[in-house]
Amino acid sequence: MATEPDIIDARGLKCPLPVLKMEKRLAAMPPGATLIVLATDPMAKIDIPLHCQQHGHAHRLATEGEAMRFEIIKG
Picture 1 (cartoon, rainbow, N blue to C red):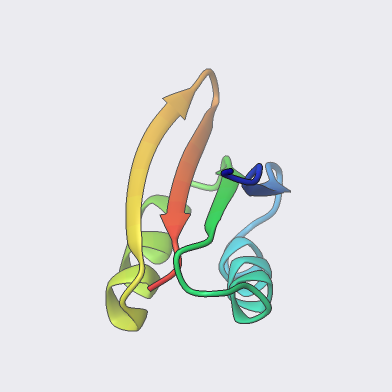
Picture 2 (cartoon, rainbow, N blue to C red; picture 1 turned 135 degrees about the horizontal axis):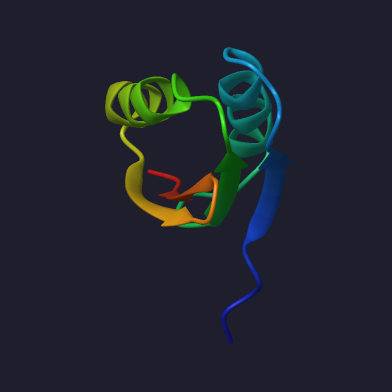
């Protein structure tokens, strides 16, 4: 049975806050867990994928209205 993914609503926050919140939450999650990050800061489009790549997490980006929706699977 799959559990609901954790969600961080970082809309309105400027980088590096979305990445810092994501990093803290991921540290407490088991490998394979899914985390959703919602962000509006344009830098998140660069910073979040870069952090995921550096730390071995899979990620996918979608756009929901004004927000970016990052789906991250902890590596």
